[in-house]
Length: 429
Image (cartoon, rainbow, N blue to C red):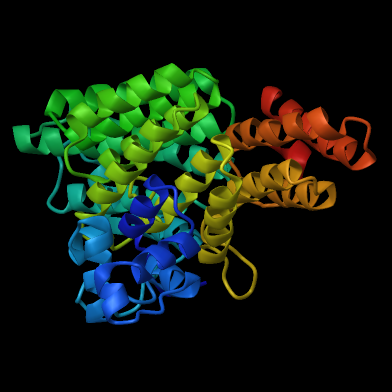
C-alpha cells in the first residue's frame, strides 16, 4: 500500500484532454521549454506525478507543464510542502478498532450516566459526536448487519435526549449528531437491500439538516438519493439529485462526492464530455479541502476515492485503457502487504471494472477471475455488488453465453441476487 497522496487534479486534466501518459509526456517534451531544455519526460515520470510520489517537479518540468496546460503547478495539484507520509490511504486506527473504541466510549460510567439523565451534562455532546465519528469510520470493513444493529441501538439511546431540557445550541448540536447517525443507518440499510428503511432514514437525516441549516448534512442526504438512483438505473435522476445536493453542500466532502456522483450518472448515459468536466470539478474542490484526519470516515471524501470513482466512470464510457489504469491503482492503493484491504468495497468494484475490460478484450479467464475476486471480498455492499456484478454478467452473456466459465459466474451472480432479494447475505458466505 503506497504512502502517497494521489494528484487527482493533474490526472483529471489529462483525462479531460483524453491523453495517455505517453501522449502527455510527448507533449511536454514538445513544448518550447521542453525543446530548449531537451526534456526527456516519459510515461513513468507522469505516473509518479499522478501517484503523488513527486510533489514538486523540477523547474523545467513545471514550466513545461504550464506551457502545455495553461495552469500554474499549484492548480495542477503540485505543492512545495513536503509530504510526511499519508494518513489518507491507511488510517491511523483501522476501522475494526474504531468499532471497539466506540463500544469502549459508551461503556464508560460517565457517558452511561449522562445518557440516563433528562438533561445533557457537560461533555455529553462531545462524547456522542466522537462515538458517531467512530461508527462512521467503522463503515468500510464492519459487516453491514453488525453496523446496522449497533447504529440502531445508539439512536435509541440518544433520541430521548431530544425530549429533555436543552438550550437552543444544545438542541441544534444534538440534531446534527443524530442526523449523521441516521444518515449512516440509511447507508447500511441500503447495503443490506432494505430499500424502504434506507429511504426513511435518508429523509429523516435531510430533515434534521434542514431544521438546523446544516448544508453538508443535507448534501449527503441528496447524495444518498443519487446513489440509490444510480443503483436502480434511474440515471437522469442521479444527475438531478447530485446537482440539487451541490446547491446546498458548500465546500465540503459532500460537494466532492456529489460532483463525482454526477459524473457517474453522466457516464451511465454516455455523456463523456460532461462526465470529464464533473470529474475535473470534483478534483478541484477536493484539492482545496484540508487533508482528512480520518479518511476511513464514510462521510469524508479522499483522493483515493476520486481514482476509484473515475475507474467506474471510464468503464461505463468504454474507455478501457483509462478504466484499467484507474481500477488497478485503486486495488494497489487499498491493499496492505498482507493482502487485506482498508477499503474492500472499493476493491470489489475495481475488480468488476477490470472484469468488464477483460471481456471487451476477449479474455474470458481473466474476466471471470476478476469477477469472482469481487464476490470473495468479505465486507460488501450487497446492493452495490449485485448491481455491478450484473454489469459484468451482461457483457459475459453477450459474448460468452455458451461458455462454462461464463455460466459459473452467472450462477454466482444469481446466488448474490437471491441473497439480496431474500435479505439473507449469509447465502454468499
